[in-house]
Image 1 (cartoon, rainbow, N blue to C red):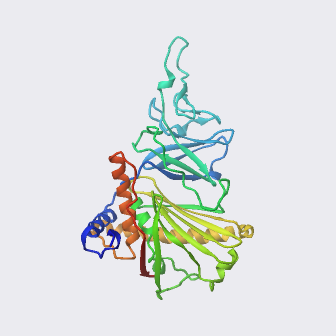
Image 2: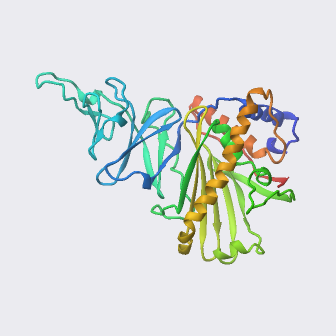
Image 3: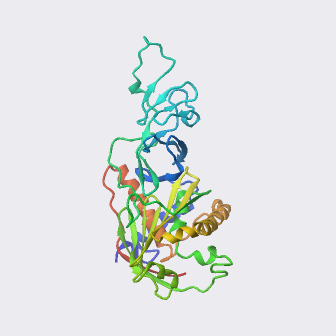
Length: 377
């Protein structure tokens, strides 16, 4: 019997439960580094524009040049510390608004207006810093290196940029929305993979109102890159909503560090992909993204209504997190219950293994094993 399937309270699983409970109870999360984080939807950054964001407590300035390429600078001028966002962007270089220093896309100074011709300064040694950035499928991702404040880092090759399955690199999402959650990234992620709260939280007059009839669920899981997946399975043919995808409709749900949930619904005619992404603003605040792609062209007509419903769904989670903050300072120890809370344990184990691998300068080794989980929801 592997350690993930041992009864609670025995052997290695008891230690795992203790570690995960500690992670759930702490008010400040450890922020996972050396990973890609969703920074912004591509459509929010037009050519010649710059947009500031905060990722893992670091100020980042996203810029799109005249040719349409995106780059990211550390949003602090090394001269007097003022954020570069308060300056100007000419489509190629960013000028600090305090003294006019200019920085190129690599974060290297290329002009200091106050210098006289005979005053020689090696501009190549003056840097604000730059981050690796990637634009895929209508989303802008920023790589946060292992050392905080090191910007582009030591040159180590990052893991692959997250991609939505079955879609071309040029695919654009139909719906993109996000909300600020006043909680740690850990708690946002634990809610992301919680399979039993929907009947009590995600209820409305039009959806599962006062739902209390719980059904037994059995799901099969297996390891996946940087996480795990719920093994692809057929969706109930009696559910008419799935018929728009054609025949033999199946779904697969994948969870991955640093806090991604990717679900693909695939039928004989059409498919859809949903992404939920956890982006830590700092140790105590998190931005949660909800993004959907689909191949059904006529669904574009329903986008305004769908966006309202998606935001309503996301806000239900947000309101519950706000209420949770009232109790967490008084909760000495939180509980995890098999099998419903097993995925929270997995996420904690993966997070700790990621941090240990970095500290020991070795490759990440996924500690999970295939397993079947059962719960009522």
